[in-house]
Image (cartoon, rainbow, N blue to C red; front, top):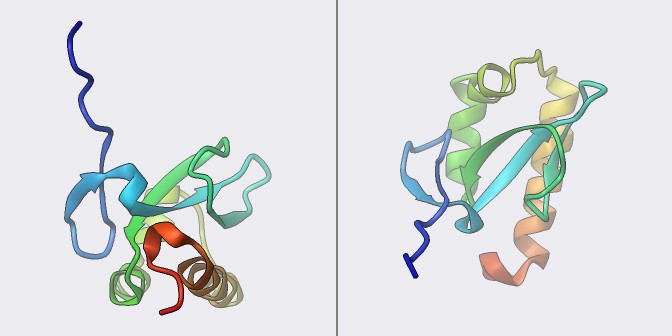
Length: 99
């Protein structure tokens, strides 16, 4: 049986290509709302960023979330996403909980 290839994705912040399970997924849902997807499986247009606050901030500064998700993201949404992102990093064992 042929081994499967890893599912590679690119971080919007640093541009590093890695397996998608090592990245945090942000998704734009059907109603246009943008949120952090802790499971990585919710339906909608997704974008990935390393589990690092510096990569998240770089993606925000360069407006990469809006471009990748093909939507306009306001400052209030960015603040909410930042809190969701930080909460995920603090609680999810995949990303080294207890930072």
